[in-house]
Length: 78
Image 1 (cartoon, rainbow, N blue to C red):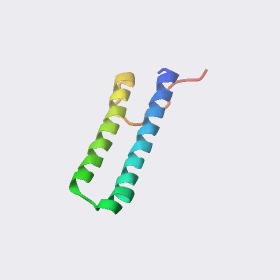
Image 2: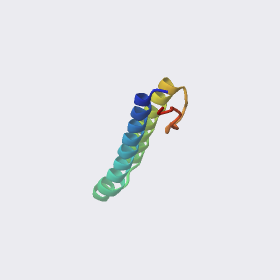
Image 3: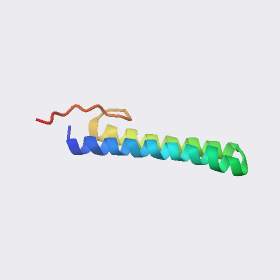
């Protein structure tokens, strides 16, 4: 396992987590307060979160052969 790909995978996973939390915060605390909760908005948030998670899963599958969001550290630093 390449250390660079491993670190890139972790970076992508953390960015996806931050984007999902930011999207949910924006919709449920900011937009919903101004316009109210609507079905279109909730479907949009679920769609965006699904796409972000799929990007991470596909990257990890192509690089490591594992269907996972968070890859364990299997390489040796020796």
